[in-house]
View (cartoon, rainbow, N blue to C red):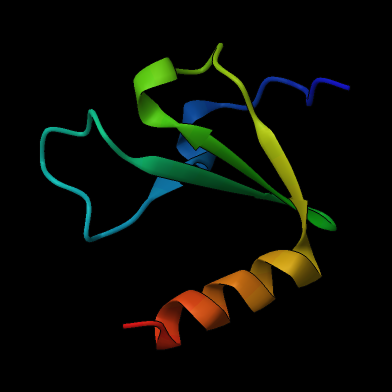
Length: 66
């Protein structure tokens, strides 16, 4: 199922992303889910939908990985 198209202002990218903005992972938060996309594909590209709890565990793991 395709998520409803969301306004661009709802999407965030990492502060670690370069200023070019062409190779970023962007996320948008929704009730119970996080949407993930590749900035190179733009608003019509593929979306990955992840449950909020899974996203929280992933971010926690990524923050501790070296």
